[in-house]
Length: 442
Image 1 (tube, rainbow, N blue to C red):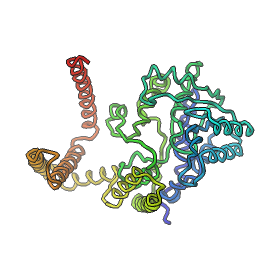
Image 2: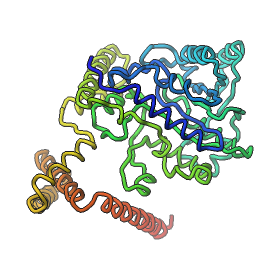
Image 3: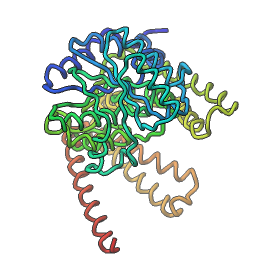
Image 4: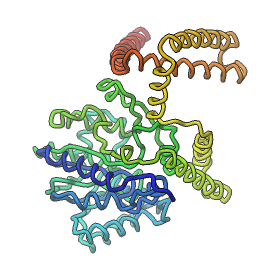
């Protein structure tokens, strides 16, 4: 398989980012490690040249005192949840991770999240004690992460506090939905209660922020996580601060809103959830087109596996439909990354010039007006599919032409104006919603 990824460069950039953070931070750093801490075979299949042991090797090479918190949900242990890749039970994966960490001479503590005492959990704790692993409990917080901020703080303070002594605390898990982020929040809140300074960061392989959500590399990640219920939303804080769109997980964004008031004074560089990410993947991809083809192969592999499991009753209908949706997006072969689109429209406005492209914009705006009028004439949702699709095409055409105008007049200037206007719209909407509730006597 042709290599598409410069692994040495990636290790160098990630080490520089983490070391720079540690050297510039006075307090403790809680570093959530997204995805697999080792054996990241998915990444190595999508990005040929990526080492499955990258995260472990990078962390081991960081020259500072460090320790680990391994998070696992009591529900995952009790329900005998399995990893999708190696088919190991979460409980067995925990033992495997503890063994590896101890061989690397790292101190490791286990936090059992969503704690509930059961015979299975009692046996798990007994085994951990024999391995000389400290055990801590994080309790269920109803409606987390949507819970009221003031109520959340008191709830987090009820959790066991892992009294860490190291500068760097790596927070890992045997698989998704294990409570890593909530554990980081709990620790930082408890650190503050004990007059200790602590900040939060996260290293992740995917998603790749510089690529669109519909790029095959990111779609392959979505296919790997099809069993995790989540929704991508715009990071509003990041957009307001920088005028750029960043997609993040909605639950992570809600959780960040609980954390932000605690860290904002001490961690002034962080203005949004996206600012906490340490991800140098994109700058190390050496052949994006070939990497894209590898990602599509990975999606097809997962699709075939999903079909087989669905037919045998091992996969639910929701997961199956999600895999089909991802496969259909990938096989279109028309997906360009944001970087590719940027380059294309810069070249377009440069080659054809402002006069021609501005006239084309006027024409496309006229076409959109016609398409919208026809759609409304057909009573909107009752309109035939061809009228709906025509409207979508015209909206896309206008978007593409407007982008070229942004290139011509200055993307940063327009992005800043858009951000300001979006913020004013937000305030106006909040005002009118409040007035509407008052009028209704709510």
